[in-house]
Image 1 (cartoon, rainbow, N blue to C red):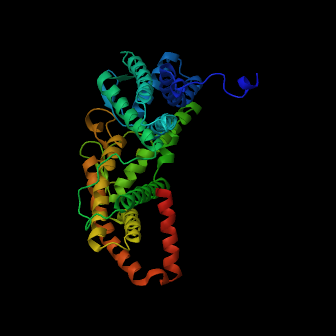
Image 2 (image 1 turned 30 degrees about the horizontal axis):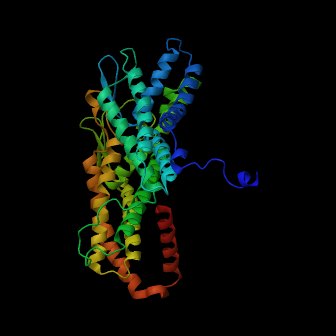
Image 3 (image 1 turned 180 degrees about the vertical axis):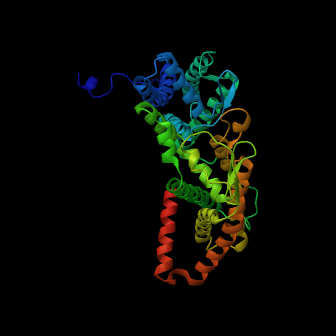
Length: 423
């Protein structure tokens, strides 16, 4: 009896404690349903509060599925004229990406210690998520739906976002292994620590640019007339709450628009209508609180002060690069700064594409930052300020060292804090 109690009764092999295919499939379904529930609760709450009796619970469910698809960047059409609706509410996009990334991270942690990831498990989670996406597309494909889906582009958009977010979670769960080959650059231009410095500088640039966009947006709220438009549009409790939720889901979009404004690229507010610090040409816009923040028609004036936010973001990247380049040559410092400018282009293209789009046909078919202009403006600011700023800061630190005084030490402490936040 002692021998039986002193050891496990069953010596299970390690393969038997792995999750079943059904469990992984339900994990993907659960992740999709969690994001759906975050949308369904306020939508059905508004449906209950709304005084209009012509909408059924099925219509509210279709609205939930439509918002869920829009959060993945899926294009929809509305109305009998099939007007396009392609503006993705970035708050829903961020929440969806975070939940999918966490699911991928958990899958990778379960597989750690058993060799490389068993691709059956992540692929099954992915299939479960796409199963819910197929149901959402089928529900919104009804001709009676207010917002109708298109099967191929909508499923493709969901599949791309889910694959990217799950892949990021798997990569981070495995300890962020190097999956890309080292750039074939000579050591005289690309030192060993350059990739890490580039990542910190890029993260610092993006965080500072987002903060600058928030400052521009806050100034627009203080100086704009969003409150008057809200009073004109909102009648009852359901109207006010619905408009508030719509504005909240579009706040990240407004941050991207404000960042594009601060960069000087501006953004489109319809066909042949543009808003930017160098000048604004506007026509009649729909009544919506966020669109009430647009400046009036004018030429270059004090609105150019918004570009200070972009300059501060570029200087942040310069200081991060220059601080790490004290033992590098000027050529290595310049190459890292130039690589940071190039690395900022792909995320800028993606974010500008998702933050803008169409709200209808005709005049409102172009809305938001133009992707190539937004990306080019970011690269230009980094090349114009971050590159010479990094060289100057490297020279200053190399000349004064640690005895540069309390002011410099305080600045270095602030830059280290930014590095920790960006890591």
